[in-house]
Image (cartoon, rainbow, N blue to C red):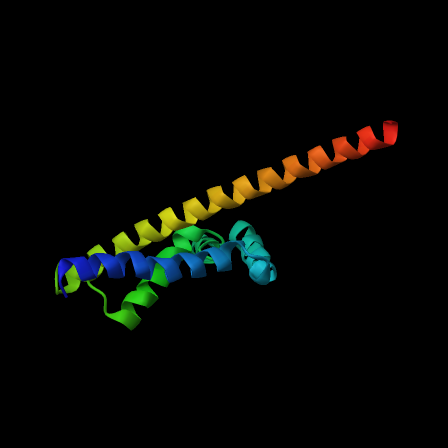
Length: 132
């Protein structure tokens, strides 16, 4: 695979990695299992158990495991055609996926801020109408 194709694969493969990692660690559909994992990650007796449950609550941690699965299914290697290509691809995919998730978090925060500001303006407008 030539370098330009590898780079395209890098940025495209990072999308489902980011999507899966974000969905499992943040979205409502996985809230109950995530809360169960949070409880165990804080209260279990052994450090190994606490860390194992923590990985389902942290998008950065979870993205490593999703990346490993993607590498297994796609056989994607970056720059080198041996085991080192898997290592480079893995860490590169994690990095790009986490950039995507950070951008998503910023976008969602901006949208939420706008909604709150709009609600505040609507409430102020309603109060002005009532007082007239």
